[in-house]
Figure 1 (cartoon, helix red, strand yellow):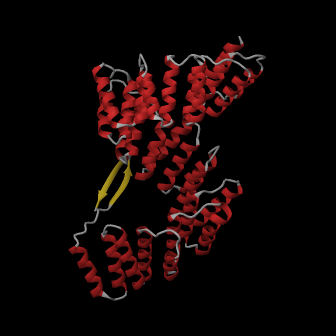
Figure 2 (cartoon, rainbow, N blue to C red; figure 1 turned 90 degrees about the horizontal axis):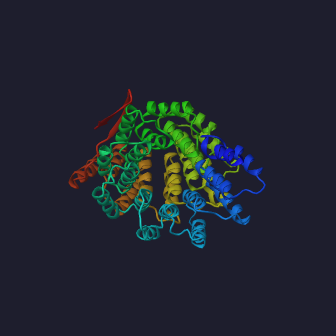
Figure 3 (cartoon, rainbow, N blue to C red; figure 1 turned 45 degrees about the vertical axis):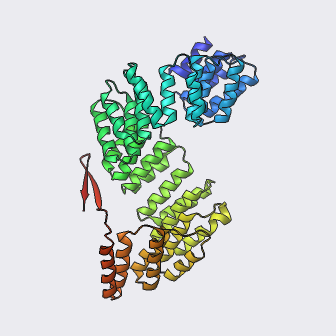
Length: 486
Protein backbone atom coordinates (compact mmCIF):
# COMPACT_ATOMS: atom_id res chain seq x y z
CA UNK A 1 0.00 0.00 0.00
CA UNK A 2 2.78 2.41 0.97
CA UNK A 3 4.64 1.53 -2.22
CA UNK A 4 1.63 2.39 -4.40
CA UNK A 5 1.12 5.68 -2.57
CA UNK A 6 4.81 6.53 -2.93
CA UNK A 7 4.75 5.72 -6.65
CA UNK A 8 1.71 7.93 -7.17
CA UNK A 9 3.25 10.82 -5.25
CA UNK A 10 6.78 10.62 -6.72
CA UNK A 11 6.13 9.52 -10.31
CA UNK A 12 2.54 9.37 -11.51
CA UNK A 13 1.10 12.70 -10.36
CA UNK A 14 2.59 15.46 -12.55
CA UNK A 15 3.97 18.76 -11.22
CA UNK A 16 3.67 17.78 -7.56
CA UNK A 17 6.41 19.06 -5.20
CA UNK A 18 8.68 16.37 -3.77
CA UNK A 19 7.82 17.38 -0.18
CA UNK A 20 4.85 15.00 -0.11
CA UNK A 21 6.65 11.87 -1.40
CA UNK A 22 9.54 12.68 0.95
CA UNK A 23 7.14 12.67 3.92
CA UNK A 24 5.83 9.23 2.84
CA UNK A 25 9.35 7.87 2.30
CA UNK A 26 10.57 9.06 5.70
CA UNK A 27 7.80 7.10 7.44
CA UNK A 28 9.06 3.81 5.98
CA UNK A 29 10.97 1.91 8.69
CA UNK A 30 13.20 -0.03 6.30
CA UNK A 31 12.81 1.24 2.74
CA UNK A 32 13.80 -1.33 0.13
CA UNK A 33 15.44 -0.81 -3.26
CA UNK A 34 12.04 -0.30 -4.93
CA UNK A 35 11.25 2.62 -2.61
CA UNK A 36 14.67 4.17 -3.18
CA UNK A 37 14.27 3.70 -6.94
CA UNK A 38 10.96 5.57 -6.92
CA UNK A 39 12.44 8.48 -4.97
CA UNK A 40 15.61 8.66 -7.10
CA UNK A 41 13.51 8.61 -10.26
CA UNK A 42 11.17 11.23 -8.80
CA UNK A 43 14.03 13.59 -7.97
CA UNK A 44 15.51 13.09 -11.45
CA UNK A 45 12.17 13.76 -13.16
CA UNK A 46 11.65 16.85 -10.99
CA UNK A 47 15.02 18.25 -12.09
CA UNK A 48 16.61 17.75 -8.70
CA UNK A 49 19.57 15.51 -9.67
CA UNK A 50 21.65 16.60 -6.67
CA UNK A 51 19.03 15.20 -4.29
CA UNK A 52 18.89 11.99 -6.35
CA UNK A 53 22.64 11.47 -5.90
CA UNK A 54 22.47 12.22 -2.17
CA UNK A 55 19.67 9.66 -1.78
CA UNK A 56 21.65 7.07 -3.75
CA UNK A 57 24.60 7.60 -1.38
CA UNK A 58 22.26 7.09 1.58
CA UNK A 59 20.96 3.92 -0.07
CA UNK A 60 24.49 2.51 -0.32
CA UNK A 61 25.38 3.56 3.25
CA UNK A 62 22.32 1.68 4.54
CA UNK A 63 23.43 -1.43 2.60
CA UNK A 64 20.35 -1.45 0.36
CA UNK A 65 21.50 -3.14 -2.83
CA UNK A 66 20.87 -1.18 -6.03
CA UNK A 67 19.41 -3.13 -8.96
CA UNK A 68 18.95 -2.81 -12.72
CA UNK A 69 16.23 -0.18 -12.15
CA UNK A 70 18.35 1.97 -9.83
CA UNK A 71 21.32 2.48 -12.10
CA UNK A 72 19.62 4.01 -15.19
CA UNK A 73 17.97 6.67 -13.00
CA UNK A 74 21.04 7.61 -11.01
CA UNK A 75 23.24 7.65 -14.11
CA UNK A 76 20.73 10.01 -15.76
CA UNK A 77 21.01 12.30 -12.72
CA UNK A 78 24.82 12.27 -13.05
CA UNK A 79 24.54 13.05 -16.77
CA UNK A 80 22.33 16.07 -16.06
CA UNK A 81 24.91 17.42 -13.62
CA UNK A 82 27.87 16.45 -15.85
CA UNK A 83 29.08 14.65 -12.73
CA UNK A 84 31.63 12.43 -14.48
CA UNK A 85 33.58 11.41 -11.34
CA UNK A 86 30.42 10.24 -9.54
CA UNK A 87 29.25 8.52 -12.72
CA UNK A 88 32.51 6.60 -13.00
CA UNK A 89 32.13 5.41 -9.39
CA UNK A 90 28.60 4.21 -10.18
CA UNK A 91 29.94 2.47 -13.30
CA UNK A 92 32.29 0.53 -11.00
CA UNK A 93 29.28 -0.55 -8.90
CA UNK A 94 27.48 -1.63 -12.07
CA UNK A 95 30.36 -3.97 -12.87
CA UNK A 96 30.56 -5.15 -9.25
CA UNK A 97 26.90 -6.23 -9.30
CA UNK A 98 27.22 -7.93 -12.70
CA UNK A 99 24.96 -5.54 -14.62
CA UNK A 100 27.50 -4.44 -17.21
CA UNK A 101 25.64 -6.19 -20.04
CA UNK A 102 22.15 -4.99 -19.10
CA UNK A 103 20.73 -3.03 -22.05
CA UNK A 104 19.04 -0.29 -20.00
CA UNK A 105 22.10 0.25 -17.83
CA UNK A 106 24.40 0.29 -20.88
CA UNK A 107 22.19 2.93 -22.54
CA UNK A 108 22.40 5.08 -19.41
CA UNK A 109 26.19 4.68 -19.24
CA UNK A 110 26.54 5.72 -22.89
CA UNK A 111 24.33 8.72 -22.12
CA UNK A 112 26.52 9.66 -19.15
CA UNK A 113 29.82 9.49 -21.02
CA UNK A 114 28.48 11.13 -24.18
CA UNK A 115 26.86 13.91 -22.15
CA UNK A 116 30.07 14.53 -20.20
CA UNK A 117 32.20 14.79 -23.35
CA UNK A 118 33.90 11.41 -22.93
CA UNK A 119 33.16 10.53 -26.55
CA UNK A 120 35.77 7.80 -26.93
CA UNK A 121 34.46 5.91 -23.89
CA UNK A 122 30.86 6.24 -25.09
CA UNK A 123 31.81 5.04 -28.59
CA UNK A 124 33.80 2.10 -27.16
CA UNK A 125 30.79 0.97 -25.10
CA UNK A 126 28.45 1.50 -28.05
CA UNK A 127 30.66 -0.58 -30.36
CA UNK A 128 30.69 -3.40 -27.80
CA UNK A 129 26.90 -3.73 -27.61
CA UNK A 130 25.42 -6.92 -29.08
CA UNK A 131 22.06 -5.24 -29.75
CA UNK A 132 21.88 -1.48 -30.12
CA UNK A 133 18.58 0.04 -29.08
CA UNK A 134 17.14 3.25 -30.51
CA UNK A 135 18.00 4.89 -27.19
CA UNK A 136 21.67 3.93 -27.61
CA UNK A 137 21.73 5.31 -31.16
CA UNK A 138 20.13 8.55 -29.95
CA UNK A 139 22.65 8.99 -27.14
CA UNK A 140 25.63 8.37 -29.37
CA UNK A 141 24.34 10.83 -32.00
CA UNK A 142 23.56 13.48 -29.39
CA UNK A 143 26.89 13.07 -27.58
CA UNK A 144 29.40 12.87 -30.46
CA UNK A 145 28.62 15.95 -32.56
CA UNK A 146 31.12 14.61 -35.11
CA UNK A 147 29.84 15.24 -38.63
CA UNK A 148 31.56 12.20 -40.17
CA UNK A 149 30.22 9.83 -37.51
CA UNK A 150 26.84 11.54 -37.72
CA UNK A 151 26.63 11.07 -41.48
CA UNK A 152 27.59 7.41 -41.08
CA UNK A 153 24.78 6.95 -38.54
CA UNK A 154 22.40 8.79 -40.87
CA UNK A 155 23.27 6.35 -43.66
CA UNK A 156 22.75 3.42 -41.28
CA UNK A 157 19.33 4.79 -40.29
CA UNK A 158 18.34 5.14 -43.96
CA UNK A 159 19.62 1.66 -44.92
CA UNK A 160 17.95 -0.12 -41.99
CA UNK A 161 14.55 1.54 -42.19
CA UNK A 162 14.86 3.43 -38.89
CA UNK A 163 13.63 6.80 -40.16
CA UNK A 164 10.20 6.06 -38.74
CA UNK A 165 11.55 6.46 -35.19
CA UNK A 166 11.09 10.13 -34.21
CA UNK A 167 13.49 9.95 -31.25
CA UNK A 168 16.38 8.80 -33.40
CA UNK A 169 15.68 11.25 -36.24
CA UNK A 170 15.34 14.09 -33.72
CA UNK A 171 18.83 13.22 -32.45
CA UNK A 172 20.11 13.46 -36.03
CA UNK A 173 18.41 16.84 -36.49
CA UNK A 174 20.03 18.05 -33.26
CA UNK A 175 23.43 16.68 -34.32
CA UNK A 176 23.32 18.39 -37.73
CA UNK A 177 22.39 21.76 -36.23
CA UNK A 178 25.19 21.56 -33.68
CA UNK A 179 27.64 20.72 -36.47
CA UNK A 180 26.53 23.78 -38.45
CA UNK A 181 24.53 21.80 -41.05
CA UNK A 182 21.23 23.56 -40.39
CA UNK A 183 19.80 23.10 -43.88
CA UNK A 184 20.48 19.34 -43.76
CA UNK A 185 18.72 19.25 -40.40
CA UNK A 186 15.74 21.11 -41.86
CA UNK A 187 15.43 18.63 -44.75
CA UNK A 188 15.33 15.76 -42.24
CA UNK A 189 12.83 17.69 -40.14
CA UNK A 190 10.52 18.32 -43.11
CA UNK A 191 10.60 14.62 -44.09
CA UNK A 192 9.44 13.44 -40.66
CA UNK A 193 5.84 12.13 -40.70
CA UNK A 194 5.44 12.87 -36.97
CA UNK A 195 7.11 15.65 -35.00
CA UNK A 196 6.73 16.07 -31.26
CA UNK A 197 7.67 19.14 -29.21
CA UNK A 198 11.24 17.86 -28.74
CA UNK A 199 11.73 17.73 -32.51
CA UNK A 200 10.38 21.24 -33.02
CA UNK A 201 12.59 22.49 -30.17
CA UNK A 202 15.70 20.93 -31.72
CA UNK A 203 15.08 22.65 -35.07
CA UNK A 204 14.11 26.02 -33.56
CA UNK A 205 17.14 25.92 -31.26
CA UNK A 206 19.34 25.05 -34.24
CA UNK A 207 18.19 28.12 -36.15
CA UNK A 208 18.71 30.31 -33.09
CA UNK A 209 22.22 28.98 -32.42
CA UNK A 210 23.12 29.53 -36.08
CA UNK A 211 21.99 33.19 -35.78
CA UNK A 212 19.16 32.52 -38.24
CA UNK A 213 16.70 34.17 -35.91
CA UNK A 214 14.07 35.14 -38.45
CA UNK A 215 13.77 31.49 -39.53
CA UNK A 216 13.54 30.44 -35.85
CA UNK A 217 10.51 32.70 -35.36
CA UNK A 218 8.94 31.62 -38.65
CA UNK A 219 9.26 27.97 -37.61
CA UNK A 220 7.80 28.80 -34.21
CA UNK A 221 4.72 30.26 -35.92
CA UNK A 222 4.47 27.04 -38.00
CA UNK A 223 4.65 25.06 -34.77
CA UNK A 224 1.67 27.02 -33.43
CA UNK A 225 -0.32 26.39 -36.63
CA UNK A 226 0.45 22.66 -36.27
CA UNK A 227 -1.18 22.72 -32.79
CA UNK A 228 2.00 21.49 -31.09
CA UNK A 229 2.07 22.88 -27.57
CA UNK A 230 5.42 24.55 -26.81
CA UNK A 231 7.23 23.98 -23.52
CA UNK A 232 10.04 25.71 -21.63
CA UNK A 233 12.57 24.20 -24.05
CA UNK A 234 10.86 26.08 -26.89
CA UNK A 235 10.73 29.39 -25.08
CA UNK A 236 14.44 29.97 -24.41
CA UNK A 237 15.66 29.89 -28.07
CA UNK A 238 12.57 31.83 -29.18
CA UNK A 239 13.25 34.54 -26.60
CA UNK A 240 16.87 34.63 -27.72
CA UNK A 241 15.73 35.29 -31.29
CA UNK A 242 13.22 37.89 -30.10
CA UNK A 243 16.04 39.69 -28.30
CA UNK A 244 18.21 39.85 -31.42
CA UNK A 245 15.39 40.90 -33.75
CA UNK A 246 13.63 43.26 -31.36
CA UNK A 247 10.45 41.19 -31.69
CA UNK A 248 8.70 42.63 -28.64
CA UNK A 249 5.19 41.38 -29.45
CA UNK A 250 6.34 37.77 -29.85
CA UNK A 251 8.28 38.08 -26.59
CA UNK A 252 5.15 39.36 -24.82
CA UNK A 253 3.17 36.43 -26.22
CA UNK A 254 5.75 34.02 -24.80
CA UNK A 255 5.53 35.74 -21.42
CA UNK A 256 1.71 35.48 -21.44
CA UNK A 257 1.96 31.81 -22.39
CA UNK A 258 4.39 31.11 -19.55
CA UNK A 259 1.95 32.69 -17.09
CA UNK A 260 -1.10 30.96 -18.61
CA UNK A 261 0.52 27.52 -18.46
CA UNK A 262 1.98 28.21 -15.01
CA UNK A 263 5.44 27.30 -16.20
CA UNK A 264 8.14 27.50 -13.57
CA UNK A 265 10.17 30.68 -14.05
CA UNK A 266 13.54 28.93 -13.86
CA UNK A 267 16.82 30.82 -13.91
CA UNK A 268 17.34 29.98 -17.59
CA UNK A 269 13.81 30.86 -18.73
CA UNK A 270 13.54 33.95 -16.51
CA UNK A 271 16.91 35.31 -17.64
CA UNK A 272 16.03 34.74 -21.32
CA UNK A 273 12.69 36.52 -20.88
CA UNK A 274 14.32 39.42 -19.07
CA UNK A 275 17.05 39.71 -21.72
CA UNK A 276 14.42 39.77 -24.48
CA UNK A 277 12.52 42.60 -22.81
CA UNK A 278 15.68 44.62 -22.19
CA UNK A 279 16.90 44.30 -25.77
CA UNK A 280 13.45 45.34 -26.99
CA UNK A 281 13.59 48.43 -24.73
CA UNK A 282 10.86 47.27 -22.33
CA UNK A 283 12.69 47.96 -19.06
CA UNK A 284 9.67 47.90 -16.73
CA UNK A 285 8.65 44.41 -17.91
CA UNK A 286 12.23 43.16 -17.52
CA UNK A 287 12.42 44.37 -13.92
CA UNK A 288 9.04 42.81 -13.18
CA UNK A 289 10.27 39.43 -14.48
CA UNK A 290 13.49 39.77 -12.48
CA UNK A 291 11.61 40.46 -9.24
CA UNK A 292 9.29 37.48 -9.80
CA UNK A 293 12.10 34.99 -10.47
CA UNK A 294 12.24 32.65 -7.43
CA UNK A 295 15.99 32.23 -7.84
CA UNK A 296 18.66 34.15 -9.75
CA UNK A 297 22.27 33.41 -10.55
CA UNK A 298 25.13 35.82 -11.13
CA UNK A 299 24.43 35.82 -14.87
CA UNK A 300 20.81 36.94 -14.28
CA UNK A 301 22.08 39.97 -12.35
CA UNK A 302 24.64 40.76 -15.06
CA UNK A 303 21.97 40.65 -17.80
CA UNK A 304 19.78 43.09 -15.86
CA UNK A 305 22.64 45.46 -15.04
CA UNK A 306 23.94 45.54 -18.61
CA UNK A 307 20.44 45.82 -20.07
CA UNK A 308 19.64 48.81 -17.86
CA UNK A 309 22.85 50.52 -18.93
CA UNK A 310 22.06 50.02 -22.64
CA UNK A 311 18.63 51.52 -22.04
CA UNK A 312 20.07 54.71 -20.57
CA UNK A 313 19.50 53.81 -16.93
CA UNK A 314 23.08 53.65 -15.71
CA UNK A 315 22.38 54.83 -12.18
CA UNK A 316 19.61 52.24 -11.73
CA UNK A 317 22.03 49.60 -13.04
CA UNK A 318 24.52 50.61 -10.33
CA UNK A 319 21.74 50.40 -7.72
CA UNK A 320 21.08 46.80 -8.72
CA UNK A 321 24.82 46.03 -8.61
CA UNK A 322 24.96 47.34 -5.04
CA UNK A 323 21.83 45.32 -4.17
CA UNK A 324 23.50 42.22 -5.59
CA UNK A 325 26.52 42.73 -3.34
CA UNK A 326 24.23 43.32 -0.34
CA UNK A 327 22.56 39.97 -1.02
CA UNK A 328 26.00 38.30 -0.83
CA UNK A 329 26.10 37.29 -4.50
CA UNK A 330 29.73 37.59 -5.53
CA UNK A 331 30.17 39.52 -8.81
CA UNK A 332 32.36 37.96 -11.48
CA UNK A 333 34.14 39.35 -14.53
CA UNK A 334 30.87 39.43 -16.55
CA UNK A 335 29.18 41.47 -13.81
CA UNK A 336 32.00 44.00 -13.79
CA UNK A 337 31.80 44.41 -17.57
CA UNK A 338 28.09 45.14 -17.08
CA UNK A 339 28.57 47.71 -14.31
CA UNK A 340 31.45 49.43 -16.12
CA UNK A 341 29.22 49.66 -19.21
CA UNK A 342 26.63 51.34 -17.00
CA UNK A 343 29.20 53.91 -15.87
CA UNK A 344 30.25 54.43 -19.49
CA UNK A 345 26.73 55.11 -20.74
CA UNK A 346 25.88 57.38 -17.81
CA UNK A 347 29.18 59.32 -17.93
CA UNK A 348 30.05 58.31 -14.36
CA UNK A 349 33.84 58.57 -14.46
CA UNK A 350 34.62 58.51 -10.74
CA UNK A 351 32.23 55.62 -10.13
CA UNK A 352 33.77 53.69 -13.03
CA UNK A 353 37.29 54.15 -11.65
CA UNK A 354 36.02 53.02 -8.25
CA UNK A 355 34.50 49.82 -9.61
CA UNK A 356 37.62 49.08 -11.67
CA UNK A 357 39.86 49.42 -8.60
CA UNK A 358 37.52 47.37 -6.40
CA UNK A 359 37.52 44.40 -8.80
CA UNK A 360 40.77 42.87 -7.63
CA UNK A 361 41.00 44.70 -4.31
CA UNK A 362 37.61 43.75 -2.87
CA UNK A 363 36.39 40.81 -4.96
CA UNK A 364 39.53 39.06 -6.23
CA UNK A 365 38.51 39.45 -9.89
CA UNK A 366 41.49 40.26 -12.09
CA UNK A 367 40.69 42.77 -14.88
CA UNK A 368 40.59 41.36 -18.41
CA UNK A 369 40.93 43.11 -21.77
CA UNK A 370 37.17 43.85 -21.78
CA UNK A 371 37.42 45.75 -18.48
CA UNK A 372 40.37 47.81 -19.72
CA UNK A 373 38.38 48.58 -22.86
CA UNK A 374 35.46 49.84 -20.76
CA UNK A 375 37.80 52.13 -18.80
CA UNK A 376 39.26 53.59 -22.00
CA UNK A 377 35.72 54.27 -23.21
CA UNK A 378 34.65 55.81 -19.87
CA UNK A 379 37.61 58.21 -19.90
CA UNK A 380 37.42 58.95 -23.64
CA UNK A 381 33.69 59.66 -23.74
CA UNK A 382 34.06 62.09 -20.84
CA UNK A 383 36.76 64.01 -22.72
CA UNK A 384 39.76 62.71 -20.79
CA UNK A 385 41.54 61.75 -24.02
CA UNK A 386 45.09 62.21 -22.76
CA UNK A 387 44.30 60.20 -19.61
CA UNK A 388 42.77 57.40 -21.71
CA UNK A 389 45.86 57.37 -23.93
CA UNK A 390 48.18 57.14 -20.91
CA UNK A 391 45.94 54.42 -19.42
CA UNK A 392 46.44 52.31 -22.57
CA UNK A 393 50.21 52.80 -22.42
CA UNK A 394 50.47 51.51 -18.83
CA UNK A 395 48.08 48.56 -19.27
CA UNK A 396 49.64 45.24 -18.13
CA UNK A 397 47.75 43.58 -21.02
CA UNK A 398 48.69 44.22 -24.65
CA UNK A 399 45.95 46.51 -26.05
CA UNK A 400 44.02 45.12 -29.00
CA UNK A 401 42.52 46.88 -32.01
CA UNK A 402 39.17 47.32 -30.26
CA UNK A 403 40.75 49.41 -27.51
CA UNK A 404 42.56 51.66 -30.00
CA UNK A 405 39.39 51.95 -32.09
CA UNK A 406 37.47 52.96 -28.96
CA UNK A 407 39.96 55.75 -28.34
CA UNK A 408 39.79 56.77 -32.00
CA UNK A 409 36.01 57.17 -31.70
CA UNK A 410 36.44 59.39 -28.64
CA UNK A 411 39.01 61.49 -30.51
CA UNK A 412 36.37 62.04 -33.21
CA UNK A 413 33.88 63.36 -30.64
CA UNK A 414 36.39 65.61 -28.88
CA UNK A 415 38.36 66.68 -32.01
CA UNK A 416 41.74 65.38 -30.80
CA UNK A 417 43.89 65.04 -33.91
CA UNK A 418 47.30 63.80 -32.73
CA UNK A 419 46.02 60.97 -30.53
CA UNK A 420 43.48 60.11 -33.22
CA UNK A 421 46.30 59.67 -35.76
CA UNK A 422 48.24 57.50 -33.32
CA UNK A 423 45.12 55.42 -32.60
CA UNK A 424 44.55 54.71 -36.31
CA UNK A 425 48.20 53.65 -36.78
CA UNK A 426 47.76 51.07 -34.01
CA UNK A 427 44.43 49.82 -35.34
CA UNK A 428 45.91 49.29 -38.83
CA UNK A 429 48.93 47.55 -37.30
CA UNK A 430 46.77 45.07 -35.39
CA UNK A 431 43.84 44.31 -37.71
CA UNK A 432 42.83 44.20 -41.38
CA UNK A 433 41.87 47.60 -42.70
CA UNK A 434 38.29 48.67 -42.00
CA UNK A 435 36.58 51.56 -43.77
CA UNK A 436 35.06 52.88 -40.55
CA UNK A 437 38.48 53.57 -39.02
CA UNK A 438 39.55 55.79 -41.93
CA UNK A 439 36.20 57.58 -41.94
CA UNK A 440 36.63 58.40 -38.24
CA UNK A 441 40.05 59.99 -38.84
CA UNK A 442 38.72 61.85 -41.89
CA UNK A 443 35.91 63.25 -39.77
CA UNK A 444 38.39 64.35 -37.09
CA UNK A 445 40.35 66.33 -39.70
CA UNK A 446 37.15 67.86 -41.08
CA UNK A 447 35.94 68.86 -37.59
CA UNK A 448 39.07 71.02 -37.01
CA UNK A 449 39.06 72.52 -40.51
CA UNK A 450 41.84 70.36 -42.04
CA UNK A 451 39.81 69.61 -45.16
CA UNK A 452 42.79 68.64 -47.35
CA UNK A 453 43.82 65.99 -44.84
CA UNK A 454 40.21 64.79 -44.64
CA UNK A 455 40.10 64.44 -48.43
CA UNK A 456 43.49 62.70 -48.48
CA UNK A 457 42.25 60.04 -46.03
CA UNK A 458 39.07 59.53 -48.05
CA UNK A 459 41.16 59.03 -51.19
CA UNK A 460 43.33 56.49 -49.35
CA UNK A 461 40.13 54.67 -48.53
CA UNK A 462 39.15 54.50 -52.22
CA UNK A 463 42.64 53.40 -53.27
CA UNK A 464 42.60 50.51 -50.83
CA UNK A 465 39.18 49.44 -52.20
CA UNK A 466 37.72 48.92 -48.76
CA UNK A 467 34.11 47.80 -48.90
CA UNK A 468 31.54 48.81 -46.32
CA UNK A 469 29.02 46.27 -45.08
CA UNK A 470 25.45 47.47 -45.67
CA UNK A 471 23.56 48.69 -42.63
CA UNK A 472 20.52 46.65 -41.62
CA UNK A 473 17.45 47.52 -39.55
CA UNK A 474 14.82 45.09 -38.30
CA UNK A 475 11.24 45.78 -37.24
CA UNK A 476 8.38 43.52 -36.13
CA UNK A 477 4.86 44.27 -37.36
CA UNK A 478 1.88 41.99 -36.69
CA UNK A 479 4.22 39.15 -35.74
CA UNK A 480 6.19 39.41 -39.01
CA UNK A 481 9.88 40.40 -39.09
CA UNK A 482 10.85 42.92 -41.79
CA UNK A 483 14.50 43.68 -42.67
CA UNK A 484 15.71 46.88 -44.36
CA UNK A 485 19.20 47.22 -45.87
CA UNK A 486 21.04 50.43 -46.74
